[in-house]
Length: 275
Ligand SMILES: [Zn+2]
Image (cartoon, rainbow, N blue to C red; front, top):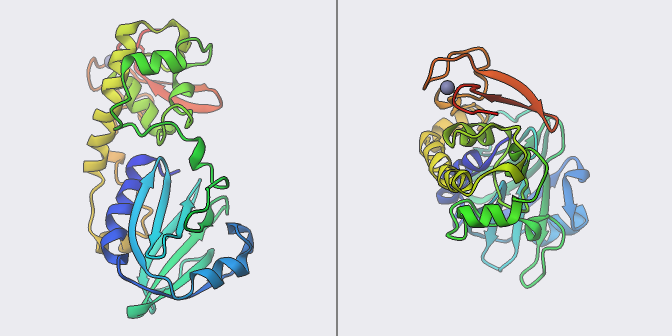
């Protein structure tokens, strides 16, 4: 599943190409991917509209339109959004196509079909997509040791699970929670309520530091993005623990361990991250 750095990359790649482009019409092959409003209404309202900007909020992508309307997209597990020339081969499982001026198409494909699109009208409250329930962005100045302690410090749940709670902090998933906890030298299975103020501080510092690092590493051109269908796992070579079970820890050399925490696979160093 794309997490904050990957979704930020999509925003950075697509925004300059989309801004000023007009939607001629929309083809929806699988109505269930349009979560709001009804598919026909979705297509009708969007025809003739022009993109003005893009935003990212947590793992959501927002396509802003000149009218003040906006399209909200969550890719979930296997969703993919591509801006391609009309003649570019169509991905399998393409469920929605926005036909644009200039011979381009914005295409949404999704093998597992959990990804969703919403259209929110200008002035309409978005009570549909879940964005309203998100906690702050990890780069928001509100993020601090005391903030994390106040929101999570009484929970019995593993700190890794708490980090993935989108209502506390938006954008962190399974991969980057492992990387952040390794950087902060905190064992992923520790109950959140057992963390010391100093550990909350380390965590608060590691979150924006790691995410900025991976956003930078994830940089690519529009051509590279299209070539790899936006799917290539670009941060793989830079991950220190995720996917490295059994490898030596890059800091202390001890073998990295894997454990299932809250139903999610987690990799950590038993030497650097004491339980
Ligand atoms: Zn280590």
